[in-house]
Length: 151
Image 1: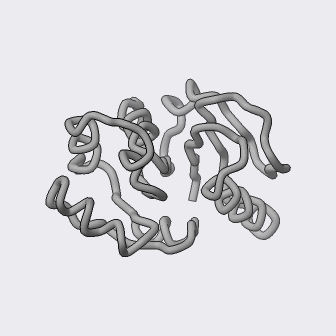
Image 2: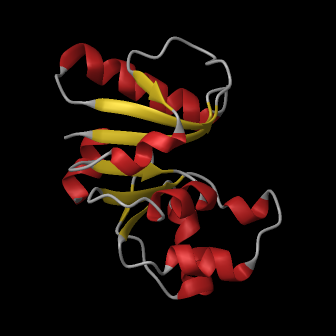
Image 3: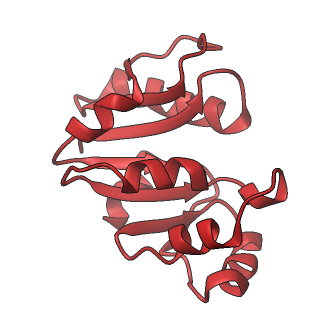
């Protein structure tokens, strides 16, 4: 399935490492169109076997799926005027690490046009306490096939 994954930056993080390994594995074995959009054009921490686009390209990414991993990225992909499906793979609870407005968190988590996928069972209760929404799925490891099967 045609897929774009939205990163904050390409420097090292646990999420970036996990996703980059998944992408590199997939591009060797499959002809699926997978690409990355990075909000911050930093130098990648490792070799990525796919195209890396600027955030401006998200508007023209049609007939696929765009995956975000933070509330900020989810807000960006929801603002795109394309017909791609949107998914939020919430790797960490962003508001635990830096201050965010409750309204911003609530608006993203209650958005009907985005599939909510959590990394951990431990995240279900805080999400439910914030917005009374249960996730569409829980995937302990980032998996393109797992996300594609949800759509």
